[in-house]
Length: 485
Image (cartoon, rainbow, N blue to C red):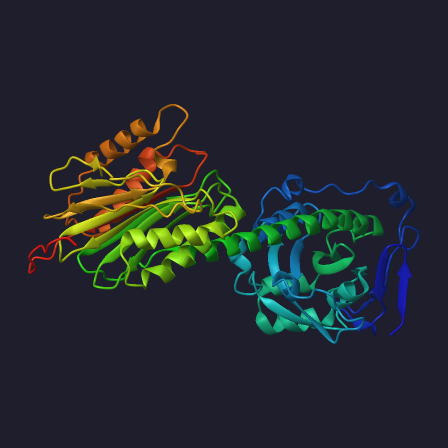
């Protein structure tokens, strides 16, 4: 197929196709000197709508694509769309073969005139993946990395639109386009998608200067889309880690119902150094733990994951709480980033009506019986943080003859620059008392209580992660408290 290339614009010469008016539409390039009146030489580069100024302001692929099409329509063109190579969007190898037989691209955004998106959802849905053969201007633009400027919508697009919306007047309006522009989205020398623009017969056709203007817009959009894709990848990774670390709140434990709450430090973090878990222990006991690896960046998250994994392994062994903490301390010595991590471990035995606590430099838990008030558990020893290899941890055993609420939390809820930690613990206990939830109130009331405590105790922009693990301890009614071992 013969081609013509002038300046920065590349186009093909397909076989002449009769138009509806009997004229011949020729898809050939127009340069600054061809088919343009003298006045066109001094024509200023077109300006886009104010939406162009916000491209890149949001780290979201769909929003960025929407900003691009809103910048172009209806001021610059009648219809605009943004497509991304599916393999690039999925972070696979985005490099195309020199002459690929076809390319797969996903429609990221679409705007026709000023129509609402839902008007075109049935015909041209956003998110649709389309296979473009090599002879289409889209595949040519991606393979050659050059803008395609044509006098009409290509035959492949025409056939596809007619098949999807036969008899639809909206489709017919698009097919009447007399000027068609396909601009590749470049990123570090690789085409990762394209922008398509059309103009109808009531508007002047695109000139090479228009193509240059869209290329400039596409260069900025390519960087913004890459930033959005990278951010969304990091966010997906963090969310996957976070979901994998949530305790099995739906799992049934003997004499124990639980709820949890978590808020990361700052506004952009999703996961940090706080960790918590609920574990079934040999003999029917339930182990609950809240811990805090120093910091709240990715290094702290990695240390937290290793500590939590080690604890889940140790929880399957038939060893007492103090020995479990001692072994966790030794493991933390060999875990990068885990030194000076703190945690509070509680082991509830519903048949013995007792709860054993072992701390490693962590704030004491709060316990509240029927009617309150909530008070900190008086620990035999606060214990030293993990990773120091001290190996000296002592249990504190508390009798719980009636249903009670147990609250384990991270220091982000009680530490601040304005007050010492004891005042923060007293304030948290006061908030727990102020809630109307009583023991045996049910799982929904526990979840509501967790959210209420987070809202009351967590100012916006806090400097540390905030974690709550709330347990409703219900002593077994058919068992007599056994002597403590």
